[in-house]
Length: 428
Image 1 (cartoon, rainbow, N blue to C red):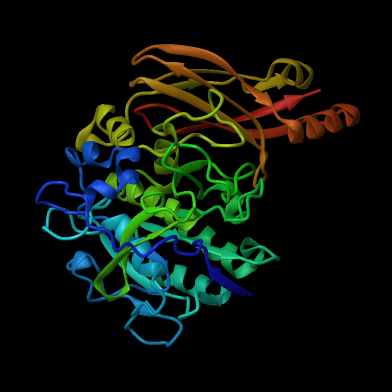
Image 2: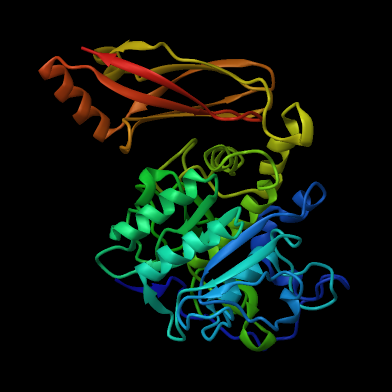
């Protein structure tokens, strides 16, 4: 299948004078996205040292001064060699958002300035490639030590996730504990264009500098987080400034730019003992709520927030500051379908840190049937309901007519603690 780089067309090649932001990074003042995700505050705790983020993309400008020391030896699946030199610019832009050097007196900063980028070239100079190369790139990245994989890719119909090889490669990465982050797509559709792995990856939509969903951004089904991606209007300062080929800098807009903000936050937590699902739950729990309270179709869990995510990691007791506190979850093992249809699945949680308890119910390998959340104070317990969605109602009403039980897994994300899963049988 033919793939395309997922970024919008460049809004502007910035030729304007840099905005001063101290002596450390002269163009840091233009990076409103880092302010939105509060990365500077997170850097007081961690800057991502030791984390490896594989950027499965068009490669990287291997000589860019703001990426000096950040790039690991990668691989080129387009030319089949070990020199993933970017001929497009897209991969260089993505890499700079994640891990451009901080405080080196040139250019820009980044979300995780001490993380390493593993460049894997699967897109050619025109930004096109194949799902087979992407799948091979994912497997290669996992084999070469990636903690996080960033997929700022998009496809024409049929969607990228329809590739069996691609979906299987994502599943293998997740099963190995790698955090997978993907761009939702730039078609303004109510669906994530990366439906692989039964919702286990982090699918990221875009917001503009006013925290409003970008007009081009996909949203809704499967899109669980938002991050800065710009507005794609031809006005300097509206989009995302990052590194570009030839040692330069450029503004770009797209969910391709939003995804690496989340990958950078994932790098900040990747040195903990969290597996991919627990890390994803922690990043979701740390998101800043946007739109209606709780998870919603426009913004998912909200806008990714580095400061709040790192705070969740710190708040959990135990060695290394990992998110491993003594959170507790109680869910009745058997619940009645009629009651669940009327009131939802009852969940009780006690969390070691303040934040929001979130519960989602799925059948094995299936899509979500119910969801609910409630704020909780540190050390306190709350009871709430995971309300059944439209799909869940269809499933449960059919089971009720046929007088059959439905088995679901209820996964509960706790502030300051590892996510917990409970098996529940819903009976007629």
